[in-house]
Length: 442
Image (cartoon, rainbow, N blue to C red):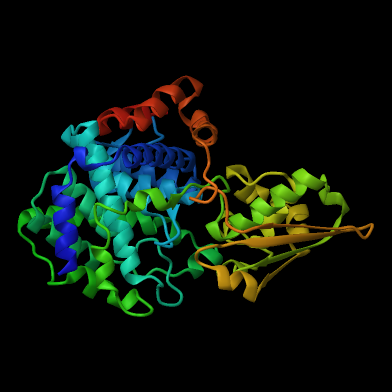
């Protein structure tokens, strides 16, 4: 069975098997994801849950972005993952149609910290989990209508990563991955578009359940034969493609096909936001002169057309609001998508943004997920700019210095300017989980 081949790959993977380019990319993904976790740790609901669990339950795993508060590995995996997804700034993968790293890293850090694992062991396990997560996703994409990708296939990657970190054999790893697939959640995309913040817990539960599945497997629980595909079958719109689980193992490294984000909103908005940035830079048009805005894009992006979000999460999934924020405030980072950013002026401008799906852009997806933004001014001028694919992926990657600047913006307010260099250096080595977690303390 193909899930057996994937489990064998995970169990056998050594640090020496990783090409230099893959190890380097993995280190950047680790650093970027830690930045997203720290940036999101101040979210009111995440911070309140962290305080509750720190007060209620001791443990050996760090709640990142706190003054060294600890809890159980299960709870740390959950709350750190929730923090990492709340801003919509965590790394993603267009062929998985989701975010693999945040489904893997929090549980891996929580487990590795208490077990004194080395940096090399940690890096190898992270790569193993990422590769497994993406292949589980590729087995079931496109998802059935209405499902949100967070919390669906990611637990398979969590279980793979933690199994590799603990040095488990292929059989035990396979059982863990199969049981993790059993814990796939019945997520709804509407939670994001309607602003229900249960969505911010999807990846948290995925990390927790993947960690639980490994504990179960080590204790003698067993998984269903062909369990990865069979448990995930109901979420696949066209049925599972089992061959994807083992396709290209050790030859095609999915880590190298991911993307980074600098806009704190759903990836589907990014091509339009990049087009806005080009348009403003090249024409100098001012928001006060704009009468209307038209966004042509692909169907998944065009579906995010509600111009009147009521909270921060809903704003991240509103293409009209994202464009309005970019034009009126010149901001698309963390501060652009807070409850406080939902001003009368921004919401009023959002109502002037028309979004439409066109056959032109639909035909290019998923290879190219682009957008064209056209603005008309009060004096009759018309300006347009098109982006064929959002920045941050293989077509137009960010430089390391750009990723470092993003990291600094997210991390410095949490741990202070003096700690940023040390954490970046440790994360990009990467250092041992215990060292990384200690450096995330506020």
